[in-house]
Length: 340
Image (cartoon, helix red, strand yellow):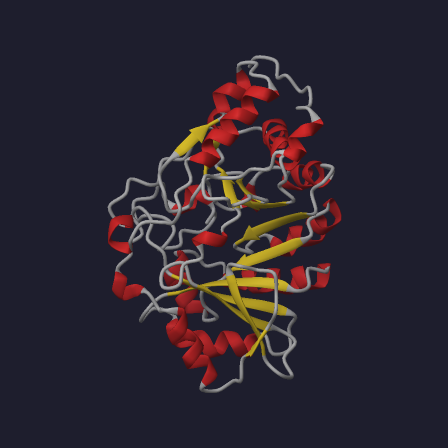
């Protein structure tokens, strides 16, 4: 591989934030560190699986840190590591340490399925990870196996407790709500956070390549909220988050949130960009357009040129995502490749 030019881009980049054509300033980068996963969630991976990327096609830690540094110099102050499943990437704690050391980065987070947290939560915390989200779509063991096609429910539950013990408080719990699949567990999840410092986040089911999405599979956030309010009094929380609608419940250690990309989209407030494991930048999760940096990183391209490639990728961002019917026909990536 050609030597990489690691000279820093001029500090003046901080004066030129990542602004798209619609005036949105981007401060949040999600980095997929692998397309591989130790679960096979039916809404994330197609039944036939996907063709895994060869190791040479995936960015190295050095390459990830170099790109992340450029993003931070242009105003990104939050990075989230995703997958596939990020905890299966070898030496993931080393990457966390390297990213946490970037000047100007305020938050280094991770979204995980929780299977390996029992053994890795404390090390991740020590390495500098500041926030943690666990994806869990059911509290029932048999249903977990039906959704994930794996028998790892006990590992995930133990991982959640290990994460809390390691100091990830509040912990976030991501629940994709699917009609006639797990929507009968909304109240169970709310009760689960009664005595735990966990923010349970109910997410509307989104269409991705090969995930069997149908409009009838959506549980609209308004319906979820109404169901929960039949038993609990939800008190709105004033937060800076533009994506989640956050609520507390009197007497509860945990909180409840709703994320509504389908029925009450929040595109006008989006500050997110994505770096896929193979080096592609996606400006929108639900739009196919990409700019790949991998070859440029490996052929001696300097930081100034990489910055221009990044800015060009940001300019591809649309004002909002397409209608639901159109999303199902787009040749986008599988969800497991993008990390959500």
